[in-house]
Each structure stands twice: as C-alpha cells, then as structure tokens.
Image (cartoon, one colour):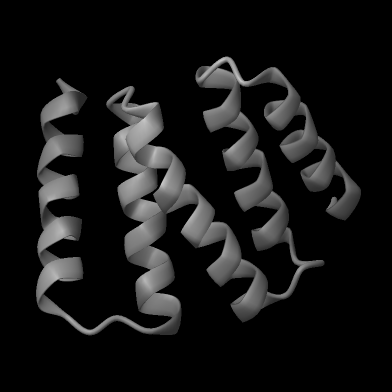
Amino acid sequence: GYAGNYRQALEMYRAVKRDCKLTGEMELEVESGMGGCMHQLHDYKGALPHRQRALVLTGSIHGKQSMEYARKWRGMGDIHRDLKQWAEALKSFREAKGIM
C-alpha cells in the first residue's frame, strides 16, 4: 500500500535534513514533505512541528498574504483537527480563509 511509500519518502527527507545544509525553499520543501508524510501515516503529533516550521518558512518566503501561506494554515487546521484540538483547528482554518 501507500504507507510504505510514505515511510520511504520520510526516510529520504530525514537523510536530506541530516546530511545537507538546507536554506529557504529547500528547507521548506523538506519540512513540508516530512509533515505531509507523517500526517499520511497518522503521526499527527510528529507532523505538527514540521507543519509549523513550514508555515513560518512559507510566510517569510512567499508572504503572509500568499495562497501558499493560506494552504499551510489549512494544513495546520487539518493536523489540529486530527489531534482533536478543536480551538486550534478553527483558528487555523479561519487564518486560511482570511487570506483566501
């Protein structure tokens, strides 16, 4: 199934993060990828710090009024929803909607 693919991708991202000096877009890609893989593997607590870092990086790279930033907020809402952190999920979805 797909779980094996997400595990392999996660290991690749971990190796890149460990072995390479990441900056800007590359760090954003790795953090987004790690958060996405962990989310798909239902490791919501593990995904949260990667999603948070990707949100910060997206805001600084693309701007806080960009659609990319809105999508990262929506992703944060998904994580908080899956963690049953309802207030944080609602806040995140509202942040996304305010940009869109």
